[in-house]
Image (tube, rainbow, N blue to C red; front, side, top):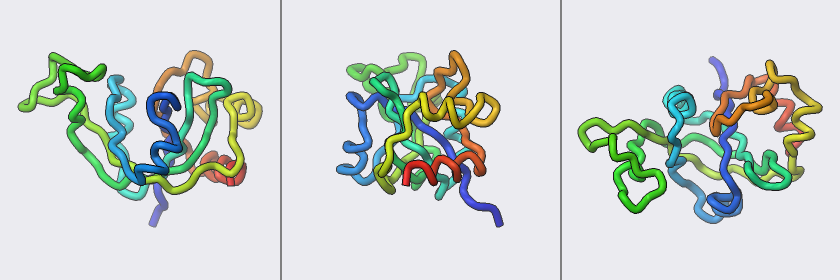
Length: 153
């Protein structure tokens, strides 16, 4: 038997923060409009673990940990004309975007910044540190995930 897969998912703290997730308990990880990131979500399984990463802030970094609790959910924001994630090419008959439901597990005891991650890992070990990487969802190898967990607990 293998354990869970590990992922890293980014959110801007002014859009949705670890504190928001802690308060909500569970949420849909919606609004993803990149096909590669969407396809990573489609590879997720119930019980997979996720590092919550605050992006587009100073400093960016890992702020918490969450778990996948729902799969293959049609992203409702693609149909809402008032939403910044509205997609006029998507229809209820043929939705283009889906999402997962995640559950809060814990807030990091020690914030792990991007600059620290760049010292700890190279781009082959952790795609996040690759120059120019802008993906909001990336897989994390189990051995790397375990090292990160040791740093944030």
